[in-house]
Image (cartoon, rainbow, N blue to C red; front, side):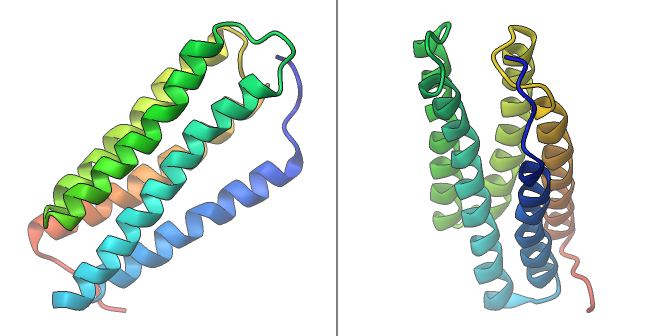
Length: 157
C-alpha cells in the first residue's frame, strides 16, 4: 500500500492528543474525588481512542479489493477495543493505576503490531510515523499521570 496520508490526519491526530493533555493536567491538579473523576474521564477517553486504533484496521481491510490476511487484520482490530474495555473495568473496580498501566501497554502493543503490518505493506506510507508520534505523546502523558499518582503527587496550576 503506497498511498499517502491526507494532511488532515496529522492535524486531527494531533488534536486528538489535546484531550489527553487537558484531562491529565486537570486530574493531576486536583485531589480527592475530583481527581478520581477526572482520571476516570482520562481512562475513558484513552479507551475510546484505543478502540479507534483497532477500527482503523477494519477500514484498511474493508477498503481493499483483495486484502491479504483479512481475518488476522480484522481480528487484531478487535483487540484494542477489548483492552480499552478492560482498562475501563479496572478503573471502575477502583484500580485506576492498573487501568492507566494497561492503556500504556496496549498503546505500545498496537504500535508493535502495526510495525509488522507496515513491513508487510498493509499500511499506507506515513501512517507508521504518525502513529509513532501520537503514541509517544499519549504514552508520555499517561506515564506521567501514572507516575505522579503512584507518588501521591499533584501539580499546581
